[in-house]
Length: 160
Image (cartoon, rainbow, N blue to C red; front, side, top):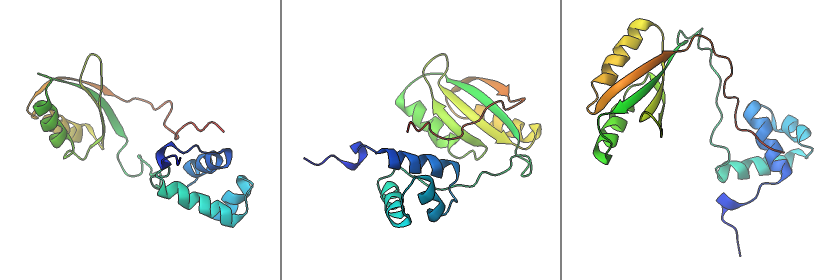
């Protein structure tokens, strides 16, 4: 019996490759191979397989929020006036059009959605807030401005 790709167990070397690549996606294959104790050819084969199987979704550059004038961040809790499929769909369609909303999670608890909004200044935030409250079905919202980033997401925890 063949195990589907999504359920295939990763071995210690696969996990090590993933761990190194999420910290440095620009590492050369030769240096990656050295770090995971493989020769370059089998290392490259493993990386390609991990990409094809969907374990690696892409490679990205971390950009400077400050230098690109996008360091003002707000977390916004949004509650809808009612909870039904039609209202969820309308909210989703509108949120996807607001480019300053960089993350949006539907959550369980005291409100319906948690948004992360990134803007350059309070005037831009006020415009985004206006767009947000005009979405049909939005009831209440609470904004929390980020004063200082204490810890950030540095990738998935890889247990090797």
